[in-house]
Image (tube, rainbow, N blue to C red; front, side, top):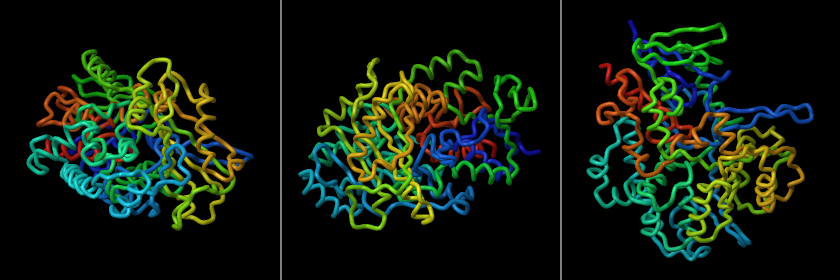
Length: 507
């Protein structure tokens, strides 16, 4: 008889783990508290003038998923995707023209030298980063427990110390001379929360955030919206025979009898498992097994998030003031900075650790979702963009920060010729993220990517060498939420690696 697997949480990691396990002969059931699957990869609908518009309430772009996961789960046959070939555009204060981030290192070297006075070795940075990324991706594919011995053996001592155990400040100083180049590269360090560029292991955030392989390290778009990833994966999994219990509240997990007690729409239910996987945040998992020691251990980690998101809808296609001569330019990723020195960047990043700070301008990432969808369907008329930014406190919801919303819009509209076509905006803060997606302290990666929470430390297992995705000391319980290695984002890598570990343990 096939072994019974219960997965709690139907986000991307739970869905990916279910896919691989069901295809390997397990009998998989997923329990999800919400009415629909997706976790942070989902959508909401707003009705304007009698017309419904869907928008991404959580993640917006597809970047960190591995191509083999995209293909092996069956997603590649169901989804239409687009990645802008046009270079990214970067704006610093008082710039009359954007800096163009060319894909070709030689072109980029020339551009940064002319615009930012950069005298460092950009080609060496890209070459070394590629070596680290190849190492990470091989580990993903092989579902190998991350460890420093492998890194030192394959990358060498120097690269391991610089890129994996080192701090981002030292890494950036090693390759770059200008503050603007360092600031641009340092953005990813703050991806998961207010992490100092001087923190140990913060350097590894940079290659991790470039380690997706669907678009060769770049970020792209899914037609209609990224929520199609989880919606299609649900359909695929149902066809494989995975059982879904949505709108179901888990009451507790009885670790002595291997039983999950939950309330579904049809009433109270009890399900026995051979193995249980938490694809949730780690705090919820600890609470469901009702272990005060584990709750305390998770609560003591650095959890604080600082990500904000402003969704905007336009009744007509956005007309950007600055484009380049490229057919994908309207869909280019754009970055707007409010700081000019690395020290200012660091101060802005860490400022929200102090209570009472609502928002400190740092940088904005602009994802042109509508223009990307129009590349896949020319009949679309309306437009939408998502603006991600950092340095928001956890204390207030978006509806309480209208001043911040207006400040972000004013900064954005300086670069748009038709701001009057904007018909709707919605600000999401870390507090909104916490309440909507149960992110502990609003952190999209559940725990910050920082010292003691990075690489081989990104586990909750008491025996990581032999059971990396195990949950504390429970023999039959595993964890593959965004708090586990490598990190969150719509990747599914923890779910895949956890499933492979479980399969190996059963062999």
